[in-house]
Amino acid sequence: MNVNSMDEASVSRSGWVSQRRLVAAGAFLGLVWVGPAEAYVDPGTGSMMLQLFGAAIVGAIFYLRDLRVRLKGFFERLFACSEHQAPAESAAEEK
Image (cartoon, rainbow, N blue to C red; front, side, top):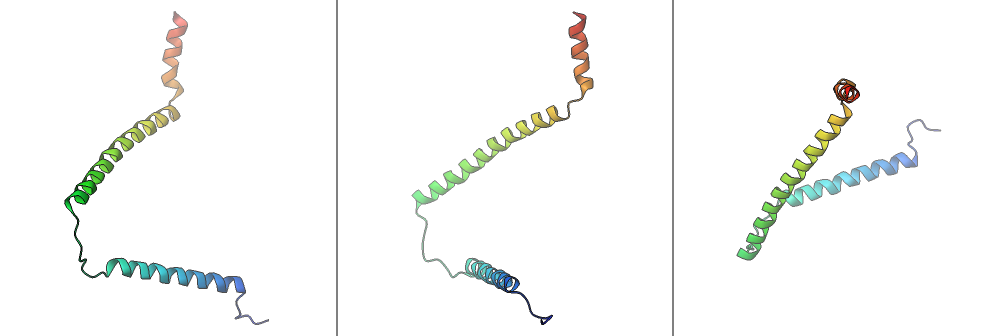
């Protein structure tokens, strides 16, 4: 058995990785190295894109605010000490 020989799985895996890198490099160059576009964006499409962009920003603000409130409540419940609960229980016992 030859020590320098590689098994079939490692050869096919390395071929797949190099092919994947080649495709990624081609896609990157295709996106970066473009010629001038001989087209225009009409006013209706431009206003629609502007409205979509604004709605995405406003939606993200509300989503993140809700997420922040939920996370804050989760961590407050998670790290709530029994010390904070003890005075409320003792006050209930006194009545």
